[in-house]
Image 1 (cartoon, rainbow, N blue to C red):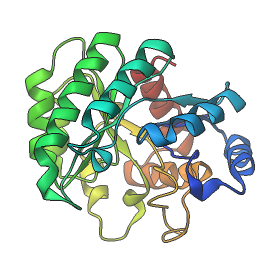
Image 2: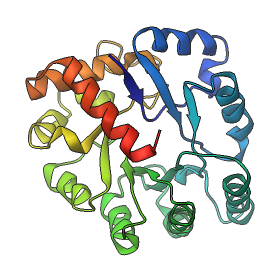
Image 3: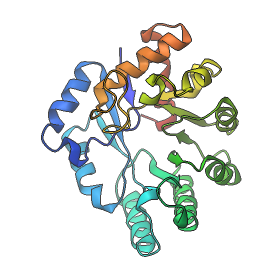
Amino acid sequence: MKFIDTHSHLYSEQFENDRTIAINEAIALGVDTILLPNISSKYTNNLLQLCNQFPENCFPMMGLHPCDVSEENFDSEMQHVEIELATNKYIAVGEIGLDLYWDKTKIEVQKRAFIHQIKLAKKYQIPIAIHVREAFDEAIEIVESLNDNTLRGVFHCFTGSIVEAKRVIDLKDFYLGIGGVVTFKNSGLDQTIKEISLKNLILETDSPYLAPVPFRGKRNESKYLTKIAEKIAEIKNMTIKEIAEITTANAKKLFHI
């Protein structure tokens, strides 16, 4: 079985001492393709170095995370994203979006960055990986307003209701990124997934964050993607092999890998 971890930050500081081990352990369990969204210009070198080290397994995205955008760095960070997209090969623009959990005062600059980066994705005809936290309505309204046959993407770390899920699916070329939260006892995400076709889902870890049960509270790793697949198989009354085949095909279709 082959899996694709569509969202992982293995280049981050949390893997400084055992990054190669973590990747090889994931590959050994069938998670042999790992997609790496950027956070800001501070991480670009580490991101690209890791992809150069594992060119058959790790693939980079380029984008500015909403929590890292400000009025002070907007111009320089957007310029960085533009130059990188123009000069290097990236599989997506990400992760981008809106986050009102930590700071609600930056909503307008976050929206500007989000819209600008969506337009860059359309220019280069690559998908977007969307981060949304406590801002689903605001984020999807922006995507709906810019949506056309050149735009596709994923709402990463989706934890919403069936109503929100259907709104994403109605965009046509968008997927729901399902991670460790689906294994959490009271998340309610299992009920949402019961009502959604597997053709609309892709798998992710968001490592080092949001480790699935039984590793909740510990550092998440790409190898734990199998635990997420096992939970979805249980919810859908399918085999883990079927989950692997369908979600991997979905990810390949979205990211053209």
